[in-house]
Image (cartoon, rainbow, N blue to C red; front, side, top):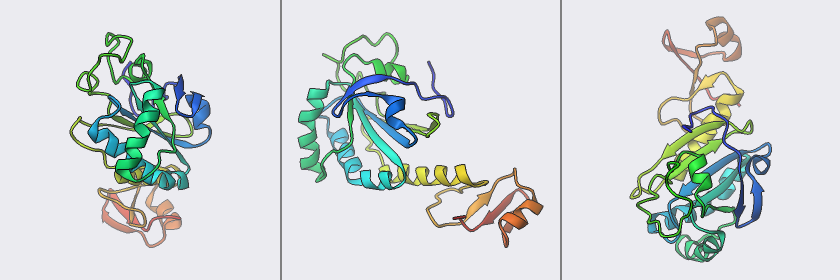
Length: 218
């Protein structure tokens, strides 16, 4: 199954370091960030999980829950967590999904159906596609997915930036330009006429007939 933006995020039940969860129930009315890893005790992933541990409060303040996934058993995750804290300086407080039968990795189209049914004996290289970030909205729809190569650590500040944009644009008829950051000017969408824009966004600027900018709405 190929997943695309605005598809419903597949639901699943899985064991995590916080116990058994049903994914949609766990998300509840929140946003969620699911980020996956090809194997425990791998160097780049260790730094990533530590970085996310340090930023978890930033996601929480935006109403977003964080959950990790690695295709190893939960008891292995628990042992790995100490290394992550040692390296990153932050305790891992978010849950980490155990996926030793590769069920979630396949469900989210990160591994093919014929990848087998166990993580045992599989190398990180075999699981290389399991390096994806999914941002899921309260409606349980996929809002963002990014896949990364094994050798490139993820930039979670970028995920925060995108989350800020998506939350803003879900409330207002605006879009955000390239490299936008919180507090900067935004773009008025084409769904808003000039007459409507004058009322909703007084003082807006017309850069081009199709490109109108305004201060970030609150």
